Amino acid sequence: QVQLVESGGDLVQPGGSLRLSCAASGSIFAVYAMRWYRQAPGKQRELVADITRRGTTNYADSVRGRFTISRDNAKNTVYLQMNSLKPEDTAVYYCNADVSTIPTMPSNDYWGQGTRVTVSS
Image (cartoon, rainbow, N blue to C red):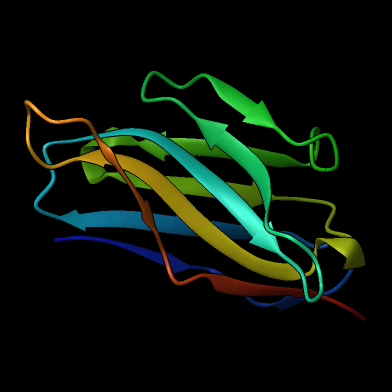
């Protein structure tokens, strides 16, 4: 029905940059809030950043000032620009979005499969 596909994860050195992308596709009426989560081995999944349809953003304290979330509503795509990467940023990054497929019904929460980011020298 609705699919989220992430891309852009890679191995990068500390201090480097990566740009993650996540595109929603399928039977979409509207895409509302979009979010990036991450999960490191042995840790719980945590919210990294989120963005409303109008572009209001929110960041975890650990990434504020280094990461930037943005979106292209025409493409149903959300991005995460990650700068000044640290080893502690190593995790699988997951895309999440509230997507409506039927105009008269509430939106549902959808998840991507994740993309791996490894920050190491």
